[in-house]
Structure formats: C-alpha cells, structure tokens
Image: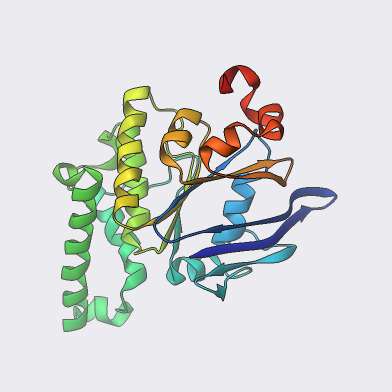
Length: 253
C-alpha cells in the first residue's frame, strides 16, 4: 500500500533522515519508534507532503507521491494526525468532519451560493459520512457540541475522525496517545485496533512501548535519522541496537 525508498531530508548541514526505506502493507499497523529527534515526525512530514524530500521517493499503491503538496497527497489517499491535536475549536464536532469531507466533493463556490442540486446532494452525503465516522470514533452523541467542551481524549478521537472523513487509504498517526492517562490510552488503542479490523493501513508513531508491542504487526526503528531495525515487535525488542538506542535493557527485561 505504501512504500518508502531511500527517503532523505537535509536541513542545511543537518541530515534529519538518511536513506530510510520501508513498506506498509494493506490492513496492517506499522509502528515507527525511536528516541526523540530520531526523525520519525520528519518521515511523516515527507510522506504527507509537508516537506519535500532531498532524495528518495514515496509510493502509494505504486504511484510516486514524493514532493507533491499536502492537499494533493490527501486527495490521493493519505491522511494524518499531529502530535499536537489540530481541530477547529470554533466549530462544532460535526462541522469539523464536514470540512474534512469537502476533499471528496466537487461542488464549487457557485454551487454553494445557488444551493444547486449537486450541492444539496453532496451536503446530504457528507452529513451521512460524518455521522458514520462519529459513530465509529464514539462521538456521535456529541455531534452538535462545540469542540471546546471535549476532553483531551475526545479531541484525540476527533482528530482521528477528521482524518478518516477524508476517505484515506493510509492513516498516519503521530503519537495519538500523547498526554493521555492509561485508561484513555486504552480507548485510543481500541480505536486503532478497530481500524485494523476494518482493513485500514495505519502507520503510527508511538512512545508507549506496551501499546506498540500489543498493536503493531511490524516495527521500524529510527535513530539519528537512520533505520536501525525492522521486524515484528518481538524481533525488534530483542535487537541489541534497539535496546542500546531506545528501549533500554531494563525495559526489555
């Protein structure tokens, strides 16, 4: 589904990502782990179009997407969330998803002003899709609530819902449980597991190793911009380079 080949990014004299390659298969959860500053978020930025690669290429279903603008990448089928939850605070919960689903509609300004038949049809379809997503992420009862009243965990769910409303083929989740308590983390864990069961391809950056080991099909480990290991959670947890760079002997034990 997603293939990264020789991805490299330089910021002046700093080599943030160096010849990183990996694949994410349809319906699997691929975890990217590593110490702070390892290059994980930079990889996501390169995949999603927020940054242009210095070298290398990204392929979605065999089609090159490296260097395209974020809205083009999103339209092709890659959606993402961010470390800091990014939603429209001034809008209602439902409206956040309607804005996201606009990516999949064709109505223009004239359609909106004249309230054409196409505009009405697409608005109805967008509302139906948004309510379906809200039901899936557990926020259907708060569809008309302002975003400000949501808890931190609910905002995390909403951010995932906004990404899902774009109709992605691949979902990139950047630390989806950051700042959450254990019980809240379990809720997001269950949501990602449900996405996997639905056949969604998910790439996730996560520091909570228990979640990674119980959720990921495969793990890619980065350190100082280099890929130092790749394999199943069990294989990675026994890798000496990973233990030294990130996990730590006591954690693995």
